[in-house]
Length: 418
Image (cartoon, rainbow, N blue to C red; front, side):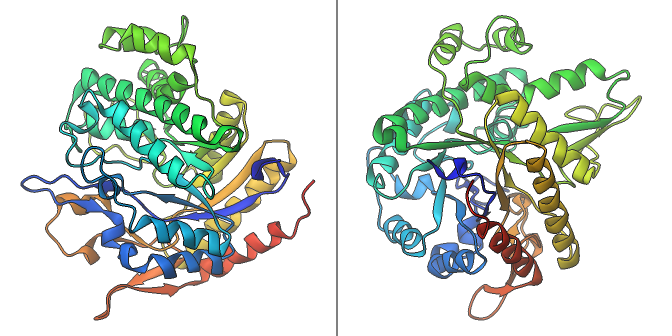
């Protein structure tokens, strides 16, 4: 029996692990481990997760650092980190791709060898840590990858429009499937695959003049997961659109013929950012007004996305990221209320197996990449520990959100498996 089959709700944390190392005029490298000084403080940071009672940690590998050149590997930083997980008894839920590629891969996700290269890297990780790591997320939030890199020209390779988006969807889906197949060959039945999607909801005038566009965007938000799980076949609402914008029929057949399925479907939900407001007469989402206005639908939205993903993919679900960027009091309230909702849904039969507070300690806003201000100007107050600037570097200061998290984690850990 694997961890997600024991009948309990498992509590975990994450360390923000976005890596976009490429630079150009007006854009800095974005490496959250560097910004938060996690590269130096990883030993103590993992201890904080244990202190909070986390059973697992969603934690990403900086591909660009451990694979500095084609076929070359540097495990010197990663080996002791993995040993620390084992020492603490925390299950690493490894993010293999949480944005960003090595700098030597010209064109990033648009390079024709990207799918092969990401699978090669992933298999190398799985082989090296086969005795200690079994839980993998092949691609975190694939549609955010695709949109930022292929539609909005925000991150490398800076493609835009529907053709750019489709090109990124194809590359990511191909690499996703190759990665999971490769790891499964290494680990066999020991492997657990946690697929993780960013949720994308729409509220407001969803049945009015923009109804067709809203329906399209809703289906588009699932498209990478639908592709890798073999669901995009005749009759799928995204099939014709993908083919019309350059998706290869051969790749479509290959994905449909050899699907990779999640053991657990991860859902990332932020109440203040996951729901776009649709207004009569004005098109916002990817349209005429940028940025799109967002509406906080709180518990209503959270319940909706957990039920939707559980029903759509027919596997257990986990809340793999959630928090509010707000005061400590507001964070504690969201934690308490969202945990209570998850328990109620479990009692109603929704197979929710995990709850993840993201992040363990504060992080820095992605807009840091396009700013010229000191890092503290981009600080996001989200964590169980605050990040505090000092002459000795960034200090971690525990706040009451950690106490509340530890209380919930301890209560569920005390429940005997059914």
